[in-house]
Length: 143
Image 1 (tube, rainbow, N blue to C red):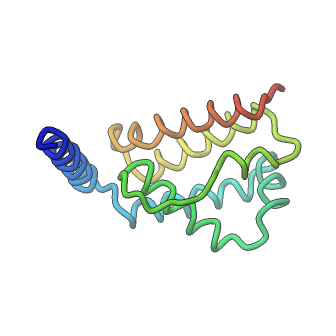
Image 2: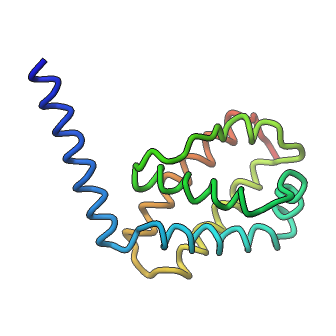
């Protein structure tokens, strides 16, 4: 039991140190909020992605709030998001794999506009790429 407790304490200590490192870089709730707000402005005005999102989201406030919690959970490991992204995306109609590429491109573009830090960019773009790949694969998308 002592080994389990020590391992848990070590894991928690490592997570806290990583969270502090990310916060020292400037990744915090405010940065994530700015990223989400700026990114979804691009998505909403995009000729390809805007109609797909617009068909599903009528009230953007709750969606943006949910996405802020999602990215806090993904990047900061804060465990504040409780949604189910896979089922939400599985119901979408007319989505092609190129839409995920466009989504990722806009996400990367937004990050670049917000910061010149390659490390911050990497902290977001690596999980975003995995998420896009996983969703696209699970949805069996082709172009």
